[in-house]
Amino acid sequence: MKVLGISGSLNTNGSTAYAVQHALEHLMEKGVTTRYLTVAGRDITPCDGCWACRDAGVCVYGGDDMDEIVDSMRWCDALIVGSPVYFGLLSGPLKIVMDRSLVLRTGDERFEMTGKPGAGIACGGFRNGGQEMTLKCIQTWMLIHNMIVVSDGAPFSHFGATIVDDARSDELGLKTVRNMADHLQAVTARMGVD
Image 1 (spheres, rainbow, N blue to C red):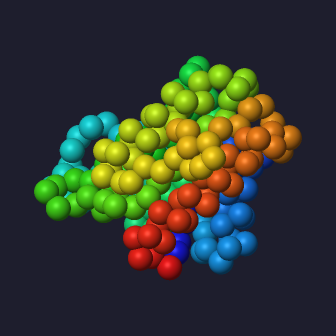
Image 2: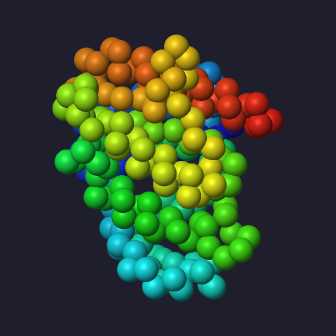
C-alpha cells in the first residue's frame, strides 16, 4: 500500500507539516510505503481555467513543481491532505494545487483518482477555529476527483483529523490523526490493496 501525504502549509516546521508527517510515520510503522510532499518552497503556477488539459491530458503549465505532485498522486493508493486554517478555509497554496490537479480528471475517461481513499487534516488556532470547514473543502475536492472520502473513524468518526494550536502538544488532535490514518489504511485494504 502506498500513501501520499501533502502538507498545504508554507511553514515547513509548523503544525500541518508535523501532523501529516505524524500520520505517515504511524502508517510506516505498520509497513505502509509513504511519500511526503509540501507546497512550501514550490513554484506552482495557478490554473487559469484554459481547459487545454481537457483535450491534451497535460497542463499547459507543465514543467513547474506541480508535475511531482501530479506524478505522486498517480503513484499513491491513498491520499492524506493537510491544511492550516486561513480565515476559516484552506490555504491559498493548497487551493492552487487542487485547481491544477484538474489534469487528473479531464476528458470522459481520465478520472485517475477514482476510487482512491482520501482523508484530511486541518490545523487551526482554536478547537472550533475553522477546521471542519477546511476539511469540507478538502473532502469536496476529493469527491470531485471521484475519490472515497474517509473520516477519522471510530470512536470519533468526525470529518477528519483536527489539530489545535501546536500539533506537538495536542494529544487529542494527534489521536484523531492516528485514527484517521488507521481508518484510511483499513478502507484501502478492504479494496484489496496490500
